[in-house]
Length: 168
Image (tube, rainbow, N blue to C red; front, side):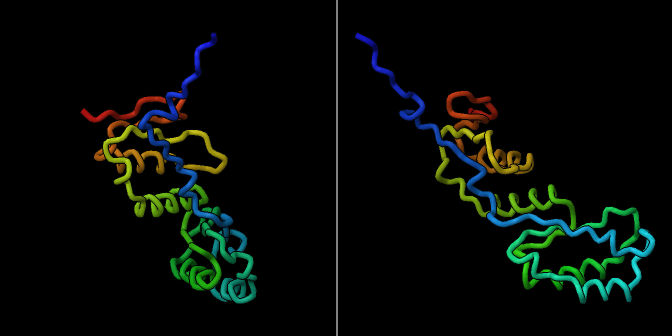
């Protein structure tokens, strides 16, 4: 008679934490202002204000927007402030920086509001396979938050994990 197969993972106290569950829904968009520079070097106020006035800001509705300048130019701070004022009614969030910096910021914000108490004294595995981009900063922050409460922290999948931390 064959032995009964027992799913030890399902029977364990192991808690799986999927960072993808914290992924804020919404499109990510970039706004590079390099094309608004005169000869790719200088921001001229009159021209820039005309761009701001005529640009279709509704295209950023409900999006998370990273604003930056990829050209090696000095852009006055007021230019970014002007863009932020125009994006504010439409975008979910606006950040000065790259898309990767935007993702890191969004995850840090979500993790700042993440309650770890349900993981107290339990072994936790932080899932490692995702369909969405999870920044390394999110893994570091969740480890920092879990270490004081979790019994142990592992990375990967419940059937194959890498030990990260074990409370003594």
